[in-house]
Amino acid sequence: MTPLKETREKMEMDKGNAILHLMEFVDDFRRERDLTALARPFPLSDEKWDALAAATAEELCGEMGLEAPAWLSNVPACRDPWFVAGLESLKAIALVESPLPFRLRKVFVLENFLSRA
Image 1 (cartoon, one colour):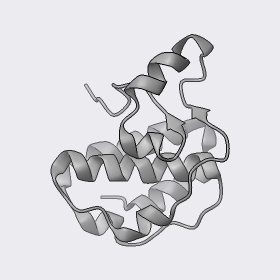
Image 2 (tube, helix red, strand yellow; image 1 turned 30 degrees about the horizontal axis):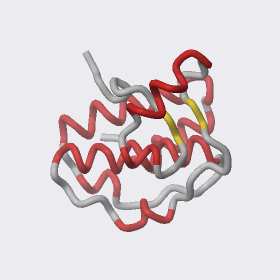
Image 3 (spheres, helix red, strand yellow; image 1 turned 180 degrees about the horizontal axis):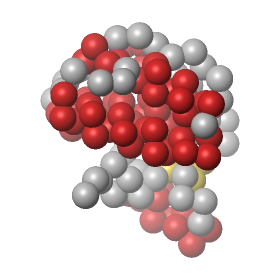
Image 4 (tube, one colour; image 1 turned 180 degrees about the vertical axis):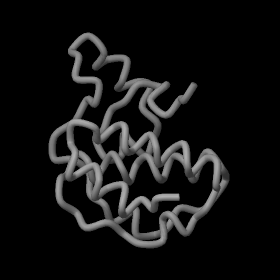
């Protein structure tokens, strides 16, 4: 399984496919349930992607009843709210539906953001 640190590096190098890299991590983490994938912090480089990656990891830990590593709480929130969907018409829904780890970092996603088929 690719650790979150390496996933975040892939996201930085390939921003056009950043969500795809993150969702591959989501799938692997749900399958493996391996906290060592979260053992090493990633270097902070882009507030939006950093916040999204950290919020995703925290949400997955909560979903699985695992304790999230303390270093995740050091990843700061975005200065300005970020609506990942990018559509004005979805902002109100994202405000309501975003899980707490995302809202705390001013990242707003739809309820099904981490849902996988």
